[in-house]
Image (cartoon, rainbow, N blue to C red):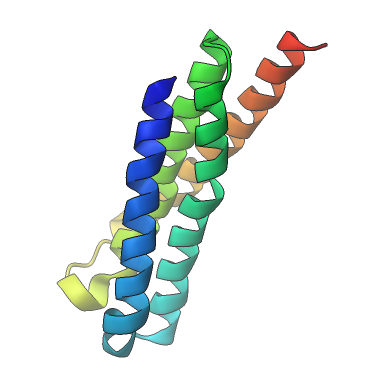
Length: 125
């Protein structure tokens, strides 16, 4: 479970540094629509750092491990696809083929939260 905390630290570093770079350097280079989408993708990373750190402190149960894996997969699919698609103005690659990945990532995030709920409920019914 310690791995979740380590990965959360890496994601936290990435999201804070990329947010600063986005706000101070990239904002004039991209449209307002792309800026808002990039900002949203980074916010979803922020929101899911807390449960990853929390999972790292809990008992090592299978359902909670799956919760962490689901959240990480969801962040990769959801935020990752939005980050790639919304930065088209920077890398000039049309990645719109990734749009179906975004809602799949959202489902993984929801699954992660659901597994946390059931994992905690099973520990303390």
